[in-house]
Length: 533
Image 1 (cartoon, rainbow, N blue to C red):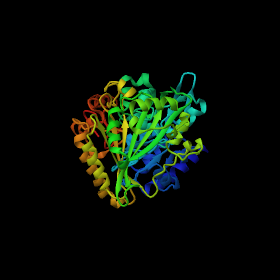
Image 2 (image 1 turned 135 degrees about the vertical axis):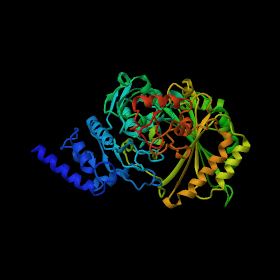
Image 3 (image 1 turned 45 degrees about the horizontal axis):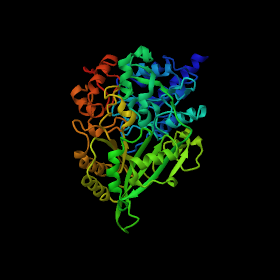
Image 4 (image 1 turned 90 degrees about the vertical axis):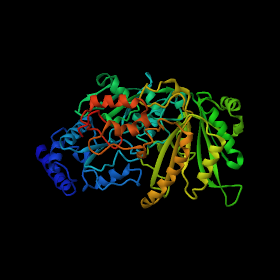
């Protein structure tokens, strides 16, 4: 009876899939039969397999497709939402023998959509069903599956203890899988390091379907997946992280100044202290251009000083008076709250319930569905003249200008060598820049991308050189892409050194050892030295 039921389900899926199967070396029924024979059982098959003619297909495909600038004529032949490791092993095995690429999606926040877009026949392995979080307060660790979002992680940790925290990003809908494997900056990074500095184990499924933990994968592969982009090497099912001691109260403030309120001098001074202040303190800047509140009809640059201090308000005021008195911070600007409340405050209106952290729906700015991001690292303070030139460019953009964020480094981040893990941006970096621009209509993309590239070009002489470094989690295909088919080391090195600097060569060696046929690949994946793809 079970076999008959399984056959009927398989037959129906085969018929549906054959109607829209992209051109490939195999037929849809071959692929589905392969899946059905490799542990995806009939009782869960409708939960796991989604074809283009299933009502669930579009819902799942679009739910985490965050950047509608990105389009492809090739849609995923099938979406697989595994509920266990056997489902993943089946998906890898069948994709491999039927010559289909895979895209692995955790939260869908890849800025260039490489977790859900491809120009060749492919399947998506969407990890939404694999999001368990096991918190061990006694040993101060947690096992977190890659399908979890950061909001869920923070909620579950705080549910167990208000005195433990996770050093990871501020956006609650970011998926753990991509965030951890690319680095993971947070408002706690100057205190505790970036997210992957606090990873102590992982579970990975390789191109042969074998399951590994840190011991069995070996230290080289464990090194590579912590900042080198996990999807170049396998599918990371879960991560073991250190939980960090946090006081009962942290202090935050958000103070904004305009050019008319001496913002230029404040930013200039900030550059000289941002990476040197007490490790408990992070002062992040968000810059945007809007109409001036002082000069009617004129635009100005607004600079928001967004800050977290691991400690109480009185300690913060003393540190600010010592390091940055020019900002004029007063006690009334500050809010004391718990760490988990500060996470909520960063993203939601005051008074929002903590349950909001469990909402997996991605919220785009109202009316904006397309965006482009770029990144840089600043190693020497930008001159007043340089800043004024940047303000001029921003104010010339008119309505809907790009936003910039300046994120300070130093502190614990600088305690690690450049080669400790693939993430190389350590000593010598004052701050990181993220450039961001959103717009409404996909057809307007070329002109808007040209605008953000113009600002990026202007910044060339003020940022890192040889290479001009970039942050892997702020994916940018402008930096270069792999060749279609047989990707060469030389081609990949063009973009690879910008993300990983000298660590790129070691990443290639690890890739060559663990995935020599380049099964796990995309436009910016690490290639093996001899690629047969």
